[in-house]
Length: 450
Image 1 (cartoon, one colour):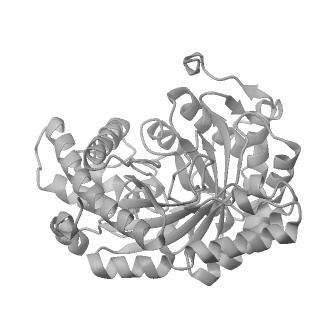
Image 2: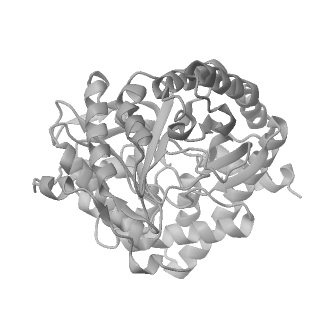
């Protein structure tokens, strides 16, 4: 049985090492809100969010005060709107309702303006995807995701081509804010149904009526633990990370179980992902450098990241039987002070980041690129990342930001947890013909497991 005694050891982590619960995300099923009358669907969605999630922010604040652990974000995720809105086609109306409800209950973001098109697209899903730029570009808190590939189905290259155009359209719609709209749109391979992190959170069809999923983050805690074992071999380093991840996970499970009880919801999972922030001392890159790299991005970075990711997962599953989401180490460039520094100096490149995504959680995240990067090039980068996810049977994703008017050498500042980023160069090789071919890249042979 968990109690507050289980987290007494984390007090120093909170005070000195940036330990926090990055998010408590209430995952809501909206399947019962679908209606052929678009206005009726809007009312049902609004009423359900207000009824089930109206107390989420207060619960987060209460638990933060009671347990002494900062809870940075309170979020809601919902059933993919491509499904909920399909009977009426009123997707944009639902986007506005999601935003209205999110603003009124005070959450940071609401996710689920999403579609699952990894094998093909229905006509309704195609129409939904065409609405994404307007929906995200004209709302404040709504986040969108599209799953375009899976290990079992392959890569839907028609959807990949479409997502490249969506990214470019979002960049243009929010050009006056350094293309911030792109930060609220993510393209997945092997998307998971219980991810609490934005912009990719949505409520999967296998989820219950209302579920609390928790994302705990502690790069600073892991870094501090490794500094205390300077000179130790890598076997010892892995053991230290495992023990640290265990403590962090126990804190997350306590917060999640208490939040679920207060909200009248099920407790879902703890996501172990080490999610960095722009704050000094809260960096995944710093952990890799403490292991012995002079800079993240150099040779050995992928191996060090593989060790970190594996050790975090092993420690977490010992602490909780309810581990899920993405769980590992995130490497968002703009949100990690060490990544920003390495990218500015040219030591961290897009190609190296792509290699790192083969062994870490998710993928190419919060990367700013020149505004004149073509939609086809964006799609090609997405396709490469999907291939890594498909072949390795893991979740990968892309959140790319082509900033209008900016080029290599410039920087953008998104503010808050989204941080800042140098504009990184992309290859000038033309991939347009490849992307325009469309069709399906077939699933790998090892997907045939039945």
